[in-house]
Image (tube, rainbow, N blue to C red; front, side):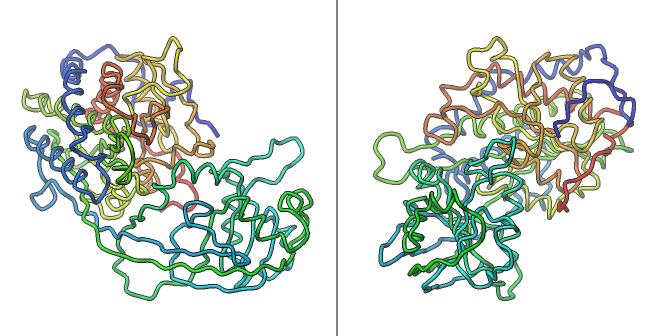
Length: 520
């Protein structure tokens, strides 16, 4: 349910009556300027950084640039005297073959696989078609050890539009979980959008996957794999049954076994990868509050280079995603460090956190929150900045295009935190705070797609600042030349003012919301 809190709640421990402007806060917010932002971003989003892909030289170069900036600002290196927090990663490459009736299909062209837990080879003469995967369709059919063909779309229901999006829905996630619990050998998930996704993102999909390295040496549990397949593959799988895949979809009622000669195998190749989060610490000035810490985070990694041989520009510079957020935390760090040098340092401490591996699955923030340098019990909130330098699709041409930001998650765990963010905006920046995506169930799923989520799942309140997707998202067009630097600076100033109030308040934000079910 969308949480937009329109009234000023009296509950909680932070007073949120709109305040007069604090000239001291305004003085240091002025350090967060378009010129300073352009200086940083023109470096970290340059071609020399090769798209900052995790585990590649460009990401390492970016980590050192951020660390050097933190050092120049006088931020403390709190990782055993270093600014670098090692994030142990494993690169997993997948070799997969797939043939139906002697016809071979290529990984990345007709299907792709989520990294299975174990290697496997399958050779079977039949599959089980389970329709939309509902319990009514599955019935008493035993799926153990079977190759299961599933329509990866929402089943039409009275009065509700049918969801066919590749990204899926909450209902489909539950169906996937249920199917996996029935221990099939593999699930073949057919969706009409897969062909287009593979055409557009083939290189990204086939790239080796990074995961957090597990120290557990126990043999991996054999779990069912999931292959996303095109409708073309689905047609080949069912043609011996005398009906087309579309006909089966239309008449889906109960599970049925279909003759199909399927040969399929997959195996993983693993190697260790070096990666680091970058941590800069600004200690608080109040002896009673300095053990409490506000995290201000952004991910510095991006998706790297297009393959060799690609014509034209190969560098995915990631100026907006998330060079803009990384620039934001560096400029905010400069503002707070100057305030401290001038005798106006924050009462609470601040951890500036540059995360690695966000594009690979929020890996850097996951590892940090599972192995925090500062106890999460002492962490009052995370302000996460991911893409604040552009105008998203929905604001193009609108009157507010240069004066808005999407705010996600601010009230999900803490009404206080939401009110602090509203107060900072009302008092200083007067931007349009758009809560359109402030819902974990939103189809775009932005709440789960950036580093703040790893704090939220541990019960740490968060705010996620975001400008929305645009035509250059995850493309070579995400260049510095397209960044709106005054807008970037204003959004970063909003985060600064919110942080200023949080670190100087008498009380930390009260956690009065609930973590999502299944969170830690």
